[in-house]
Picture 1 (cartoon, one colour):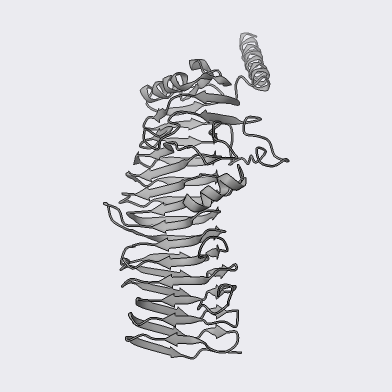
Picture 2 (cartoon, rainbow, N blue to C red):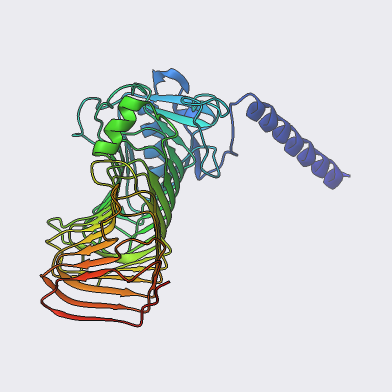
Length: 436
């Protein structure tokens, strides 16, 4: 009898607790079960009303999780206003309710909610007017930001954007950003000075810079990151973005892996540059750039190269729309395999420097400028490899300048006659191409 009473009592207690949790959750008070490794920001004084500064309350919760040896700091549904910045300690996750990255373009168009209508939204205000200063969220070793929307409410959809510091910075080892919507930051993610970062399922419209990678000496990973003008496509702001914006910037990073990324409406989609730390090498699969002045720019890269596969690139705006530009300082290797290039651009690629640029099994169309007399690929130096590609317009295909050291152009398909202008003083082989 006693055992039966105990069982009935425990069952009643569990049922009561479950009903209480369901009622609180329906009221927007609790979204996750409490436990020794979970910390609800409401319990540390966060209001989530969009007006009260919740910076200190969040930091108290994050520090409490760190003192407990790590854990998850949960931010239930609400609009959390921040006049300051946050530091996520080692082994701590700051998590909103989103399990996959949400979409909000209701500010610009009808049909989808505004970021303040649902979910976990962080209203960021610190640092307006300057790019200097700490990032809004700094992640450290084994810490994560997940399931939130970052929204800068003081940005104006109709005007040149205000500068702000980075929205997120990654430090230490294995920091991660997962399922985050960066709706309208001036600068998105500072992925420098860390090891083995993971940036996955991130969408939004960073206005000046999307992701900056540098000083990475042990494998970085960027997956499923898409930057689109969902927040504002208004003429003044978007024109500024196209004249100044850079979506992905890569300095020194060893063994960078980038998969399924996309950007629309920037001056440069992907820029590879040399910093004090060095240059980039990596594997880039399924990357795309649409309506960028220049889709991909290589200022300098590592000698062992950039491997770019299954990419798609479109350029049709700007003073000189170009898909690929390899600049004179480059000495490294860039290889494009099974990539597609289209849009009414002036040229597919301008190649310079002493390095190697290769195109294999690629498709080219809609180049030549208004007059239609520019070559798709214009090489002024280095080594050029063009093999097994399809040129789908009856326009000049390749131009080799005097300083091209070596070139191999073979087994390509040409629409119309073969039109290769070879002015190279180096070693060149052209053969086994098929024309109409």
